[in-house]
Structure formats: structure tokens, C-alpha cells
Amino acid sequence: MIARYLGDRSILLGIILLAIAAAVLIIASDYALGTTRRMGPGYFPMVLAVLLAGFALALIARGIFGDHDPVDAFAALPAVYILGGAASFGLLLRGGGLLVAIPVMVVVVGFASRQLSFVASLMLAVVLAIGSVVVFVTLLGQPIPVVGDWLRG
Image (cartoon, rainbow, N blue to C red):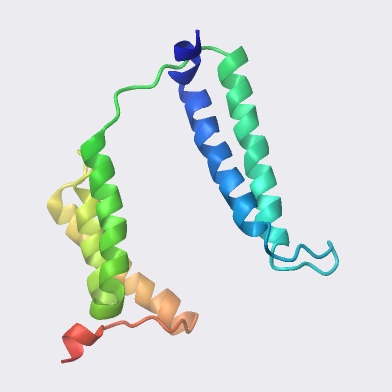
């Protein structure tokens, strides 16, 4: 009976979201909460964690009382590509800058898709890299390196 519930998509997602909400609540418990009028640094994460926990509990209830939606097989290789893309962005941003980190991330994550061709992935990478430079560096003034130390010499 427990295996039926753990094999349900809604319940499994609800458990994952509940664990994330619990982790945020534990981490944010050290921050000052403040009041609604004068919010402290822990107020916003605490409110979001409580909302996420409520959403997670609703998903778990849906899985228990609703129709059974079994979990499909886990696609490990696409998950590796997605996590690898995120990791490559973090590792390349400082040394290579946005113009290197974003295209590498998009191309690596693109391997996780069956529908996205390599050429389309490259085109998307160029558009996202240029758009990110325009939005984050030019318009918002964020101190993100456009070209990193590796390319400056």
C-alpha cells in the first residue's frame, strides 16, 4: 500500500517540495523575522516556505484522494545534462564571463532535449548571451563580467 503512494507522481513531488520548504524554514529560522510592517531578512523566505509547504500538502492530498498517476521511469541522462549545464555556468561565469558561460550552459542543457537540434541550441545560446548582457549588465547595471579573466589575458 505504501509503495502505491510513493509511486504516485503528485505525492512524490509533494514530498520533494515539502523537504525544500522544511530546509528553507530551518535555514531562515536564524534570521530576524520582524513584523509585517517592518520585515526582517527572514520574513520573506519564511512566508515563501510556508506557501510552498501548503502547496506540497495539497499535492500530497491530491495524490492520496485523487486518481493514481504513476511515476514514469527516471531519465537519468537528461538530468545529468541539465545539472551539468547549471554547474558549467557557475564554474565558467567568473573566468569566462557571460559570453562564455551562457552559451556553454545552453548547449550542454540542449543535449537533454530530443527536439532541439545542435544548430538551434547554438542560435538560442547566442540570443540568450546577448540578451543577458543587454538586460543584466547594460540595463540593470549588475556587476557581472561580460568577458572573463581568461579571455582578457
